[in-house]
Length: 119
Image (cartoon, rainbow, N blue to C red; front, top):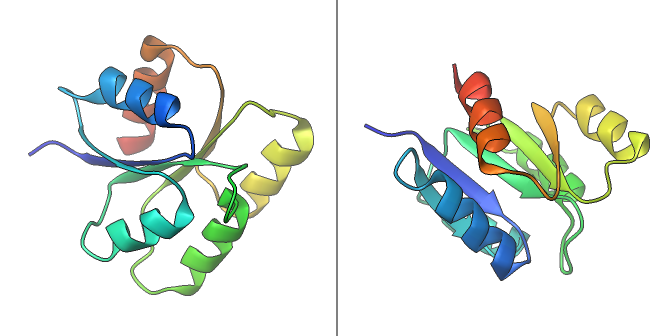
């Protein structure tokens, strides 16, 4: 059984890119923002979540804080952002994020990091 990845990003282009890079290796689910991610998480328990930081209608950091208050949150969360300033990297690490990937990213780097985080 392949591992399930949930990618949450407000950019359809980024979601399509992630799906294209990871499909065939992982079962990829996508959500176009945190509200849609909440709905997806009602029926899906991902093995790893890729979560954008800056999204209209709900940012990734606030979403992580909300998830941590719920029972059943026990999967790694990796943040995605084009803003890789040390403030974001430190803040996400302090909140318990598994990692941080700077956009844009390439397929080999993304696959290698996900493989490391899942095993």
